[in-house]
Length: 242
Image (cartoon, rainbow, N blue to C red; front, side, top):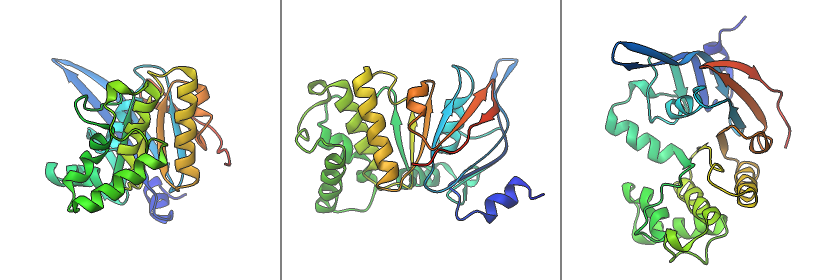
């Protein structure tokens, strides 16, 4: 039988290949195991829903895959790169080019317009002002907010703020979109609209999406669901065709 590492190498350019992945947090003399021996592979073009109760390790796993945190032991290759081998500056550049992040709290800068918030990741890239403008306008158009470019966050609804955050995640054309409880602060109608948008980005734009959620209604938009319990992968649900 092939090892997971061998299967990952055999896959057509897998997005994520985690092997025996563990993460331990230390609080004084106490060690807390957030993740324990996670084996997970995510292929190109998947929409993976990662479910589990609070404290199950969902966000920790997402942060390791996205290059925000590092594992204590085990391996994790994302887009063919061993993130643990990258230095801080190289890792920051890798994140900016390859991963789009969407968070529960939107993380928009309140004194910047929708346009300026979306433009932020592009300021770290070697693009002209004209090129940045084209990227920002396209991203805001994709999320249906091309008429709200000059609005500040306080002038937008919660659903619109999250769509600005999604536009910001897309503006660099990343291979991977990571969404951590993106509907957690939204009403039911806005939450549904955001999930429809993520599903469209997956289906029409071909983005690989990893969604952390505790809501089965949100998870149902994915093509596959995995379940975490107390830092361990407990259940892998069947794939759902879209």
